[in-house]
Figure 1 (cartoon, one colour):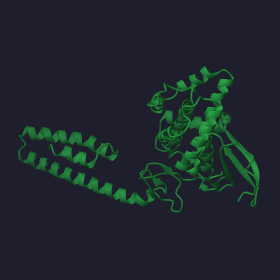
Figure 2 (cartoon, rainbow, N blue to C red):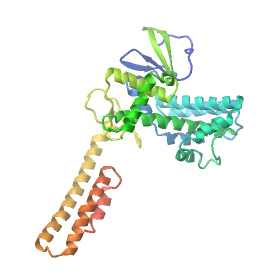
Figure 3 (cartoon, helix red, strand yellow):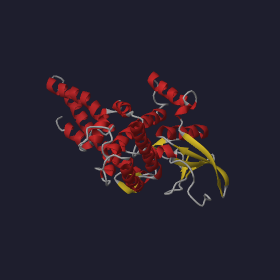
Figure 4 (cartoon, rainbow, N blue to C red):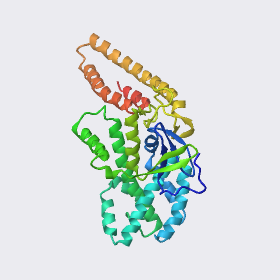
Amino acid sequence: MITRENELNIDFGLNIIFEGDKYQLVMAQSEDYYPIGGLICEYMRLVPSDIKPIIMSCEGLDEEGTAENFSKTFLKFHELINRKFPPVISTMIALEFMNSSADWFNAIRENRVEEYLELLENNYDIVRKFIFDGTELDGPGGNTVLQILLTSYYAFADNYIVTKEMFTRIMESDEIDDDEHRKGIEVFASMYGNHMDMQHIDYRLILTDRGFLNLYTIKSSFSLLIFDLAHCINKEIQIVKCKNCGNYFVPEGRSDAIYCSYPIRDNIDKTCKDVGAQVTRANKEKNDVATREYRKVYMRYKMTIKRHPENKEVAEKFSRLLNEVREWRNNLVHGLVTTEDFLEWLKQF
């Protein structure tokens, strides 16, 4: 427990006590413990599109885009994301939004608005369309509180995408062997050397009932990646991709765990660990049905061709079956079609 009469005098960010074996969050709404690797794994579970409805539900969106008006609405936004998301995600969203809005108001004061907007023009067009679609706004700016929030959202999305792309690249580093992938890993490694100025991480010592402890304040999405993965590498932490939701997690307890303990997206009362085995079994049963029905059709054609080798029409249909089934099987494996779709296609043979 931290001994303090008042809140710690530290900048806003993701505040973490780290003593070598686990993390402890230090914030008003949580003092949770996380395993090494658990911070970035939780953050990478965010679906950024979930943020827009929260923004649109805030009050004061049509107010003039002054710092005072924005601050009032942002406090409500911060409260709502704290309710919606776990602490690492909610803190990082608030942090990135604060960074971007501060950049906007600084640009106004320093007469660099055009420069600021030009930087955002290089972001992802599809993201821009999603963020501003249906808002009656044509893009970034600061005429209203809503426009500043959406501009911050746009900047946040760009930072998050870059962070997640790098995280995924590192997680897949043993599976992909090409020059582009290796160059990406080298760029990331340079953040600990030639480009260590990219580390936006503060360090302080604090006094607790456990003595002096190390407190780190993470101030950007990419810095969280740099911070957590460095400790994962030092401690040789295993990060696993969940077989149910496809997100990464740190196994706790059994090292051979294949399902995470996070709530599933469409039922927060259940975790992937709860439903994973059931889903896998159900998928296997569906695949078994598809395989069995295909085998029946395959054997029927084989027998017909053996008895009637002169029947060119049957031979042509059998050849088409063999060629097309490869694509159907691939789509089944990747979830692009259902077992029902496959069986319906099979009927024509």
